Length: 241
Image (tube, rainbow, N blue to C red; front, side, top):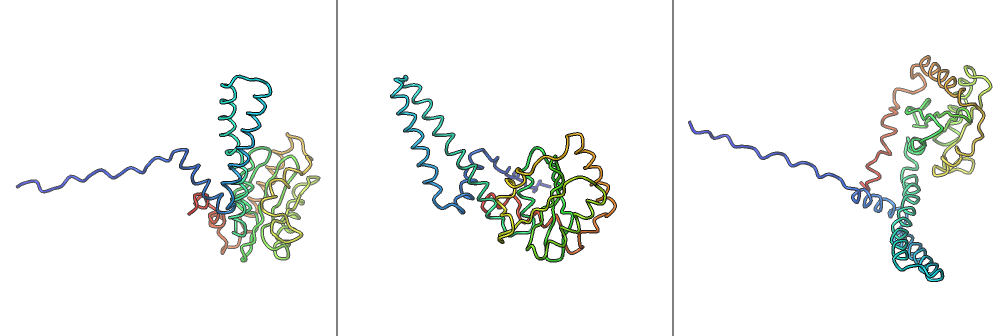
């Protein structure tokens, strides 16, 4: 019997993403929030290059140095502006979504321990996130202050019962007058004064972990899925999809 089986062609491998793909995605996402982005990239870059050319002319520098410095800053200046504006654009585009605060605090790389799950929530998707470091414990309340303040205050009292003489700060995040805007959260956290020594932070961490273990997630209603709350601001938003 003749062999009638057909050899199947190997499945096409997904194209590997290059650095310029990520750069193009970042440009598209940033431009959605800042329509004048091309001008904001071009005008400062041209101004810096002209200053470099003028300084090199006044100093009678070799033309090769002028070219090298001009090319270097023509690359660095727009990249710096893009990085700054992209973070602001990301915050603006996730603002108002449940879990948006986590999108900000997860960017904090040093000096703080960021817990991946909210420590309190309600059926209105108001969330309270907790981080801790040398300034003490910080609770970030996400939602209308009139609703979320009860959650935040309850959490603060529970923390103060197990951790004495450690500052517990509450930052209400939102767009009302008495709240901190999402894009200002990281700056607000950075201004908090240090109150603990480095060797005291692990002790605070142990107490907080023990508190979380005692509650066993009781502060999160079953109708609230923290993973879904964080997923609302996932990386697909950064690719403009």
